[in-house]
Length: 305
Image (cartoon, rainbow, N blue to C red):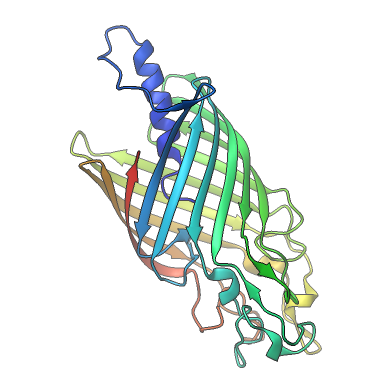
């Protein structure tokens, strides 16, 4: 989950610090706790699930939920759930003869006849430590595990999309800078892609006490220049390497809190490549001829509890 995961964690830490400040107003009742960890969460519905500029639902609606355990000392553990379609939407064939990875048997070797793949849910597990080391400054370090329960019987040139990242973030007031690096062998199903990095700068600028927040985000995904001939070989022609999966994404947006609900409207742009050099092997173009990056507008409604 990637829409509001920081809100319950920051809310719990803010309440804890406010309760310790001299002259502060009475703190709200503490959230339910488990072994000293406060329990909170959020639910989100949206026009699509957007992750780092890429639609995970082919532009279709999303329903998401997240649960967070946060300790006053700064430790946290979270899990989230969302519908997806991006993995099986990928093109197991080529642009001139598209075939969904959900049922790729017609492509031929290395795919097997009579076998399919299914992956309709993303389950995330992540945890770490947030250290408020100075006024308005927070250091965040942790691990993220992306899981996609499903059936993977006919992957061919792909790999199981389960991915593990380590991350280090630095936040000051409404600004945050975060560095993430994949420490698993593969990145979201791309073979030989361990070490992929993502760097993002995000701003959430409150407009006084109006309840409006201006959001600005920029990120850079970098895949190393590693060979992946099982994917990029078209007949006898090698059309590229994993560096073709690298891209930059941007997203300006506006959010408004209304009676405990956060409404967010954002426009994103990702310079994702549709195809490789032969204009036939696809990169971010799915089996339906759509680039899952490029220009997108997303609207979400979220509730933190």
